[in-house]
Image 1 (tube, rainbow over the protein chains, first blue to last red):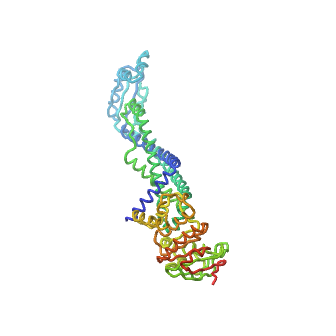
Image 2 (cartoon, rainbow over the protein chains, first blue to last red):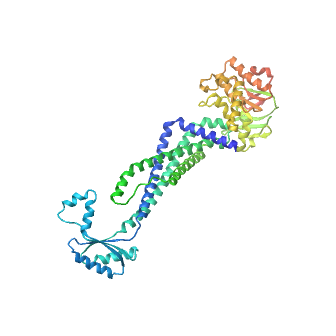
Image 3 (cartoon, each protein chain N blue to C red):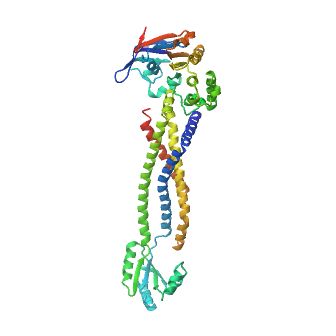
Length: 299
Length: 217
């Protein structure tokens, strides 16, 4: 156990020394790995945020119904009696055009525009909650509503949530693909640096063999090298993602406020960060293992 | 200690470096191997250190059949030998002390005891004051002595050396030979491939002579 530990710590410090002896090379490798890892990690961070947003805006089916601008209040009351008789409608809420105008005037940047208009451009509107919230039933109800007199436009508010959901699924698959590709790229980077390391350390490997070093003794520092380089790349990636989060948080927060989503960009979670670093170390180790298998046997 | 039993080494391509070589070396003996360049001296040493394997016959070191050793067992055989290579094989990116530490690190010595042993070995060859020096900064004689320190730091019972006094001026060569004589005096088996028999005369060593891969009687 003691010998094991001193072997590992010696190999660790040797690997660290080899990394530090060529700082420019090391830095370039770390940057390449960091950027390669930052793409899927950043993607995952954005994806987690989008998913959270989609979950919070629960996909409750709402139907917005806009009357024609020239419809009077009587048309609205006529409609309400039709809603009452329709068993597919659970509840509704009326939004008078004057209210909408007042609300929109308060919105940033719109006040002046609306003031400049000769008359109220907003129609009376209803928000309806269907009894059956399934997509088919709401679709059918919306089609019925479109046929009613003085109805200008009927919109399914749940549609964008479902679109977002589909988009998220697509996003997840793309992310997985990207992560796999860049993971392979990462192994290739380590593979190559370890190959160069083996070539530079050729003399040392030969001499160590002649002095009675086992294969494990010779391999150990290279494993550490790969793992440490992976860890470094992971840390660079983490910093890139963190900086990107800080940079994006402001604009995204504002955007969320404008859409009154109350949304703030969450940074990479602790678990996410842990997975990122572990994956980086693992990929570095794997790259080293492959490279050693290829190049160490001829020395 | 060492036994060659009709050992033959034929390299791929047909070159026969050693042919039907048989001899014994007793524990504590000093043996010199002479012969023209290309006679097979280096190959003989490589067979003992399991750097090469015989293609015929057997080579026994410490009772172990070197030719039949598994790859994984070879490192442990080598840890019991001290080898001074013809080209020294020092690591030029490590200082003298670190070079001598390498065999101990390989064998898994605790760092503190290893450092003590390394300094003792450097002291033995007269390089203790130069432990921080890089090999490039050492003279030819000092480099040779450093490689001897590295060979003996494990306290092997068998010391092999390939032309340890070649390319050294006579005074330096005598100093280096003296170190081997010292080890012989304390009971280490010493096996040296050399042209310069005279330097080792005080030990009255046994001499083997190779000629085109054959041992002359």
